[in-house]
Length: 127
Image (cartoon, rainbow, N blue to C red; front, side, top):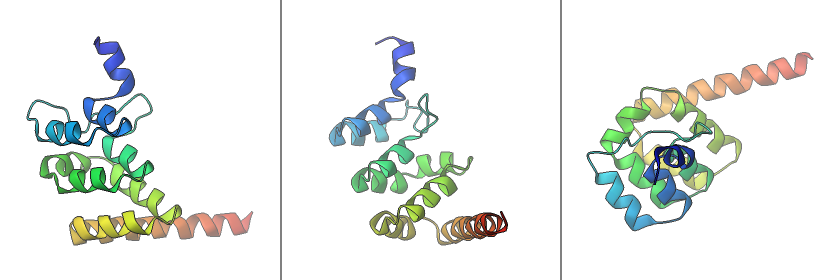
C-alpha cells in the first residue's frame, strides 16, 4: 500500500472503523507505533467518524484510551463532536460521552456549545 493511498483513507484506525473491522481496530488501538489521532483528507479523526456512524463500541474504546484522549485535548475536535451529537439528538452517544469523559472537560465543552447555540439563535432572530 503506497503512502498516497494511505493518506486518502486516513490512518488504519479510520479504515477499520469504516469497514467495521472491530477486532483489527482493537489491535491497532493498542499499537504503540500508530499515529492514533491522524485525520483523513476530510479532516475527520477516528473518533469523529465513529460518532458520525453511530458506532458506540468504537467510540467507547476510543474514549477509554488515555493516549487517544490526550491527543484530542490538543484540538477542538471534542467540542465539534459533542455539538454534532447534541444537534442530532443522539442520546446514546451523549450518555456515553457523559459517562466516560472527565466531568470538568465534559461540562466545559457542553457549556461552550450551548453558549454558541444561544449566540447563533440570537443572531438568527435579529436578521
